[in-house]
Length: 146
Image (cartoon, rainbow, N blue to C red; front, side, top):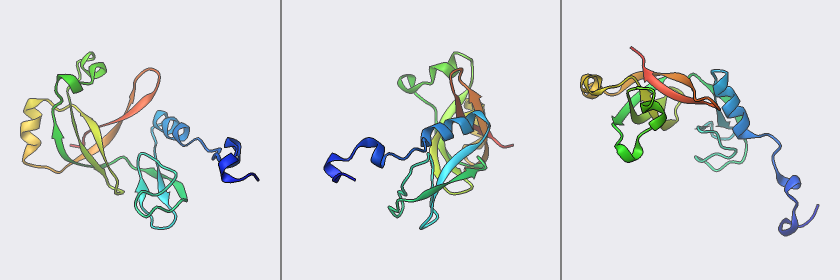
């Protein structure tokens, strides 16, 4: 093996394409994350190393997709999801914490101004995953679990 300064890509590249498994999982209705083999922290979106303890080994784990909506905002014009607005969908952006631990910023479908007023004082509220076909790929959104 050559010195680190002259190492070839194929000598250190991990052959497992982390992004490929993640996106294929969404297309199949599955949510994949990585779990640290040292401290058990779950990385989502998936990373090959742990952001909690810094350990270099993680393994695949499947998340239920269920969780809680902790907070939300309506997007402004500059942050609008035009592909959703073109389809007439009502949505907000919010912080969703998975039952398994990780939290992400996500789109929550089906919330208009009236619904927002109803749930605002009741946060956190339960949400479930929505696997949304965007044409060239499937993405993960959420909706209220009522």
